[in-house]
Image (cartoon, rainbow, N blue to C red; front, side, top):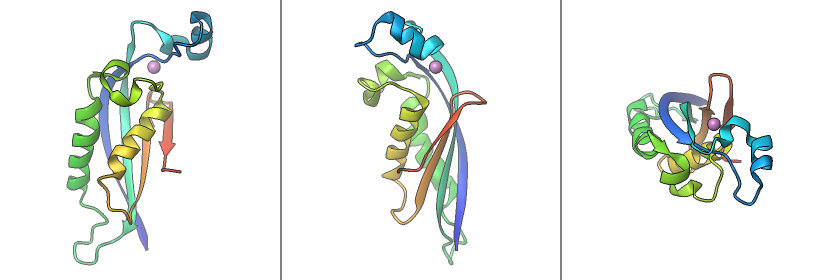
Length: 136
Ligand code: NI
């Protein structure tokens, strides 16, 4: 019997989507407002879900306080109030799209979650736009 437990989190960050090997015109066409050279911010909402067996002793799949602490140290402390392009090593040469941010977050969390549990992250860049990564 597998059960999924989830924790919501939040961070603010700035980014710019562009490729330096493309013309200004092509960047504008492909990335639109997210290509603003002076960066812009998003209020990112994150849902982290861990799926696994219920521990018969505790009744938990995972202590959500522990998950909350991991999200705080691995994601919030790392990304909140940062300029993703300039401040975060993973995005030096990688466009900080919601897709790529979700993969970076997943990789950081994966290292801290029990191997036998499955991990999924859902990242909202706007209230209506969100991406899901499960490590596939
Ligand atoms: Ni944007």
